[in-house]
Length: 105
Image (cartoon, rainbow, N blue to C red):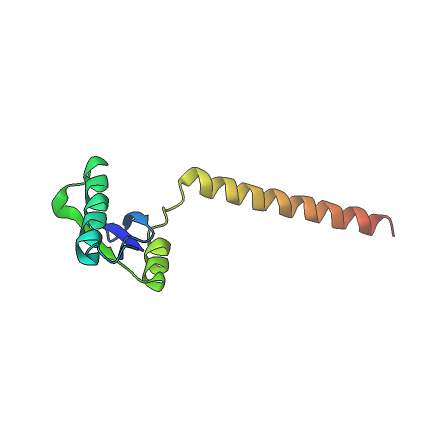
């Protein structure tokens, strides 16, 4: 797995699988890997990141999972509100259902 990381935030910009070794033994793996890392760097530049703020590298699956978790976007105020309203609405409905069941006994 290869990744590009925003050096300023430590968050992942992009990830791509593979690209460290070439299946053809005649092709130099180191050169092949460098080309693939350069693709990530160029993608980040094209997305508007300054070259000096980009790090590209190969990572293990565990490192990738840690980066992916740390790179999740923070919820928006609207998402937080929606989650809270939904939870409150569910609690109101639950209490109404309990009260309704208790009134029938």
